[in-house]
Length: 168
Ligand code: OFO
Image 1 (tube, rainbow, N blue to C red):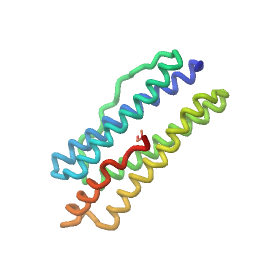
Image 2 (cartoon, rainbow, N blue to C red):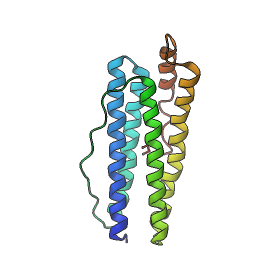
Image 3 (tube, rainbow, N blue to C red):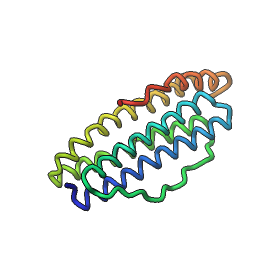
């Protein structure tokens, strides 16, 4: 059984994951609009991945007999200066999500809620993968660059990352 404070925090994380999905879906639309179809495909797929993260939390809260709550989701930005800015924001966003997960883990321990602590370990591993994935894109941008044909090759490279976004 979860404490009200734990339920509240898990419900907040449900909202964060839903925002992540909307953020990446909106970015996908922007990329598609600019002709960056590889990045659009990758981000659209990642938006679906974030929904899985959301549903996993939603199911956990429901399974404990608590009430999962869906709250209003803030509209994500819909204009970006460049493809480089898009992926800088994704990486920074994932760092924030990692921080939120770490705070949840710490809180579960402080409550001696070992069931939630164990449940959250999946997210700890997933955030490691999320950071690695988005950092790898920033590394590609640094090597290939965004000028001239660089952006064409970069977009093709990002398309290849589709299908590499899930731990399960
Ligand atoms: Fe749900 O991991 Fe990204 O945000």
